[in-house]
Image (cartoon, rainbow, N blue to C red; front, side, top):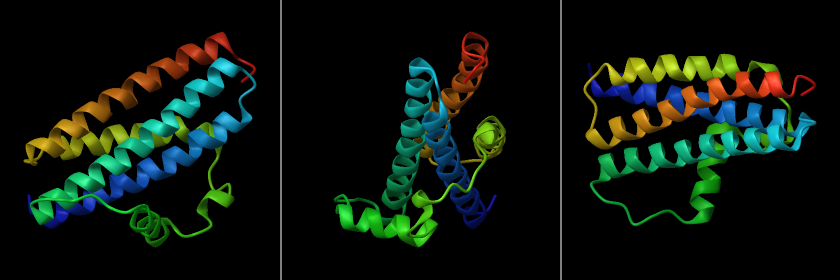
Length: 148
Protein backbone atom coordinates (compact mmCIF):
# COMPACT_ATOMS: atom_id res chain seq x y z
CA UNK A 1 0.00 0.00 0.00
CA UNK A 2 1.23 3.48 -0.75
CA UNK A 3 2.61 5.56 2.10
CA UNK A 4 0.26 8.48 1.56
CA UNK A 5 -2.76 6.19 2.02
CA UNK A 6 -1.35 4.79 5.26
CA UNK A 7 -0.55 8.30 6.43
CA UNK A 8 -4.14 9.38 5.66
CA UNK A 9 -5.48 6.43 7.64
CA UNK A 10 -3.22 7.31 10.55
CA UNK A 11 -4.55 10.87 10.46
CA UNK A 12 -8.13 9.53 10.45
CA UNK A 13 -7.29 7.32 13.41
CA UNK A 14 -5.81 10.33 15.17
CA UNK A 15 -9.03 12.28 14.65
CA UNK A 16 -11.11 9.36 15.92
CA UNK A 17 -8.96 9.27 19.05
CA UNK A 18 -9.47 13.01 19.58
CA UNK A 19 -13.22 12.58 19.18
CA UNK A 20 -13.19 9.58 21.51
CA UNK A 21 -11.23 11.58 24.07
CA UNK A 22 -13.94 14.26 24.09
CA UNK A 23 -16.62 11.60 24.47
CA UNK A 24 -14.87 10.08 27.48
CA UNK A 25 -14.40 13.52 29.06
CA UNK A 26 -18.10 14.30 28.62
CA UNK A 27 -19.07 10.88 30.00
CA UNK A 28 -16.80 11.39 33.02
CA UNK A 29 -18.39 14.75 33.72
CA UNK A 30 -21.84 13.15 33.72
CA UNK A 31 -20.89 10.00 35.68
CA UNK A 32 -22.51 9.67 39.09
CA UNK A 33 -20.24 6.91 40.39
CA UNK A 34 -16.72 7.99 41.45
CA UNK A 35 -15.28 4.69 40.22
CA UNK A 36 -16.93 5.04 36.81
CA UNK A 37 -15.83 8.68 36.63
CA UNK A 38 -12.20 7.70 37.32
CA UNK A 39 -12.36 4.91 34.73
CA UNK A 40 -13.68 7.28 32.06
CA UNK A 41 -11.08 9.92 32.90
CA UNK A 42 -8.30 7.34 32.51
CA UNK A 43 -9.65 6.35 29.09
CA UNK A 44 -9.59 10.01 28.04
CA UNK A 45 -5.93 10.24 29.09
CA UNK A 46 -5.17 7.04 27.15
CA UNK A 47 -6.59 8.65 24.04
CA UNK A 48 -4.44 11.74 24.55
CA UNK A 49 -1.36 9.54 25.05
CA UNK A 50 -2.00 7.81 21.74
CA UNK A 51 -2.46 11.09 19.89
CA UNK A 52 0.82 12.46 21.21
CA UNK A 53 2.68 9.16 20.72
CA UNK A 54 1.59 8.59 17.13
CA UNK A 55 2.22 12.22 16.15
CA UNK A 56 5.74 12.13 17.56
CA UNK A 57 6.43 8.78 15.88
CA UNK A 58 5.26 10.10 12.51
CA UNK A 59 7.48 13.16 12.92
CA UNK A 60 10.46 10.97 13.84
CA UNK A 61 9.80 8.82 10.77
CA UNK A 62 9.62 11.84 8.49
CA UNK A 63 12.57 13.76 9.95
CA UNK A 64 14.84 10.96 11.09
CA UNK A 65 15.21 12.48 14.55
CA UNK A 66 13.38 14.84 16.83
CA UNK A 67 14.43 17.20 19.58
CA UNK A 68 10.93 17.53 21.00
CA UNK A 69 8.29 20.21 20.63
CA UNK A 70 7.67 23.26 22.72
CA UNK A 71 4.30 23.48 24.44
CA UNK A 72 3.33 26.36 22.15
CA UNK A 73 3.92 24.15 19.09
CA UNK A 74 1.76 21.37 20.52
CA UNK A 75 -1.01 23.87 21.29
CA UNK A 76 -0.80 25.40 17.81
CA UNK A 77 -0.94 21.96 16.22
CA UNK A 78 -4.08 21.20 18.25
CA UNK A 79 -5.68 24.48 17.14
CA UNK A 80 -4.80 23.77 13.50
CA UNK A 81 -6.25 20.25 13.60
CA UNK A 82 -9.33 20.66 15.78
CA UNK A 83 -10.06 24.38 16.15
CA UNK A 84 -9.53 26.69 19.09
CA UNK A 85 -12.87 26.29 20.86
CA UNK A 86 -13.41 22.56 20.48
CA UNK A 87 -13.07 21.84 24.20
CA UNK A 88 -15.66 24.50 25.03
CA UNK A 89 -18.33 22.71 23.01
CA UNK A 90 -20.12 19.46 23.55
CA UNK A 91 -20.02 18.07 20.04
CA UNK A 92 -20.60 14.45 20.83
CA UNK A 93 -23.13 12.25 22.50
CA UNK A 94 -21.71 10.58 25.59
CA UNK A 95 -23.19 7.15 24.96
CA UNK A 96 -21.54 6.82 21.55
CA UNK A 97 -18.00 6.34 22.82
CA UNK A 98 -18.29 2.56 22.43
CA UNK A 99 -19.25 3.06 18.78
CA UNK A 100 -16.26 5.33 18.28
CA UNK A 101 -14.02 2.79 19.99
CA UNK A 102 -15.36 0.10 17.65
CA UNK A 103 -14.38 2.27 14.67
CA UNK A 104 -10.94 2.74 16.24
CA UNK A 105 -10.55 -1.04 16.52
CA UNK A 106 -11.57 -1.50 12.88
CA UNK A 107 -9.17 1.15 11.62
CA UNK A 108 -6.29 -0.15 13.76
CA UNK A 109 -6.83 -3.66 12.40
CA UNK A 110 -6.93 -2.30 8.86
CA UNK A 111 -3.66 -0.46 9.42
CA UNK A 112 -2.04 -3.48 11.04
CA UNK A 113 -2.89 -5.59 7.98
CA UNK A 114 -0.44 -3.45 6.00
CA UNK A 115 3.31 -3.00 6.16
CA UNK A 116 4.14 -0.32 8.71
CA UNK A 117 7.25 0.84 10.48
CA UNK A 118 7.88 -1.42 13.48
CA UNK A 119 7.52 1.50 15.93
CA UNK A 120 4.12 2.48 14.52
CA UNK A 121 2.99 -1.16 14.52
CA UNK A 122 4.00 -1.49 18.18
CA UNK A 123 2.10 1.67 19.15
CA UNK A 124 -1.01 0.53 17.28
CA UNK A 125 -0.96 -2.91 18.90
CA UNK A 126 -0.47 -1.44 22.37
CA UNK A 127 -3.33 1.02 22.02
CA UNK A 128 -5.56 -1.50 20.28
CA UNK A 129 -5.23 -3.73 23.33
CA UNK A 130 -6.12 -0.79 25.59
CA UNK A 131 -9.20 0.09 23.55
CA UNK A 132 -10.43 -3.49 23.43
CA UNK A 133 -9.92 -4.01 27.16
CA UNK A 134 -11.66 -0.70 27.91
CA UNK A 135 -14.66 -1.80 25.85
CA UNK A 136 -14.92 -5.01 27.87
CA UNK A 137 -14.45 -3.14 31.14
CA UNK A 138 -17.18 -0.62 30.40
CA UNK A 139 -19.70 -3.42 29.89
CA UNK A 140 -18.78 -4.79 33.31
CA UNK A 141 -18.88 -1.36 34.96
CA UNK A 142 -22.28 -0.66 33.46
CA UNK A 143 -23.64 -3.76 35.19
CA UNK A 144 -22.13 -2.61 38.48
CA UNK A 145 -23.30 0.99 38.13
CA UNK A 146 -26.43 1.00 35.97
CA UNK A 147 -27.38 4.51 37.12
CA UNK A 148 -24.30 5.93 35.44
